[in-house]
Length: 198
Ligand code: S3P
Image 1 (cartoon, rainbow, N blue to C red):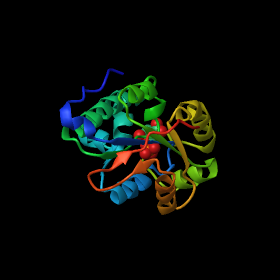
Image 2 (image 1 turned 90 degrees about the horizontal axis):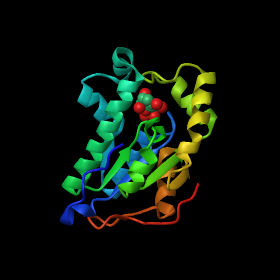
Image 3 (image 1 turned 120 degrees about the vertical axis):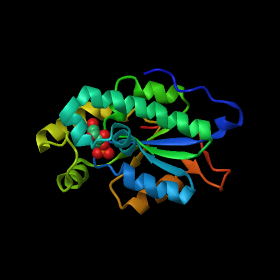
Image 4 (image 1 turned 90 degrees about the vertical axis):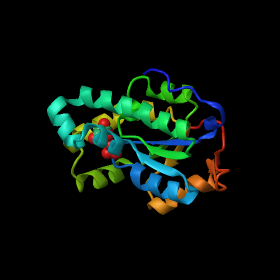
């Protein structure tokens, strides 16, 4: 991936927190709630991808294939970061399940100074959430789902923070706030820099 846009002057104060995790880990739900509590903007990368392509994610996969989807995903990640930095808007950004597992993505976000929080949910939770929902082209069957999860684990483990995503969304948000990973205070909201943990 190429480098994010340069930070400029006062605009560099925008804080961005990325939520990573497998399909069904709760990135969108937790991210929405967290952003609301912090009074930050919430951006869902899957939504940005769909809006930019004018197609649903299953349609993108069907018409153009996964490599084209990954290309759009990487472009939209850069665009989302660039926009937050340009506007100076504190932002919670929910990645797609495969975003952080794309080659070069952990390094890209680290170089951009954007912390990543991994919502780590047990396989049974991921499975039960994804089995009841459509619109995930990479959810085919339990065996391939488990295999993809195993393949991506080492990527998720590179995140700056790990939080258990098994509980109710409100509890997960409370845990993120309780751990002091993000500190809020109106416009003074800022991320607390702490030692990475897996
Ligand atoms: C994907 C996960 C999806 C979406 C796309 C690909 C993946 O996001 O980006 O279907 O590769 O795991 P969610 O994790 O929000 O379902």
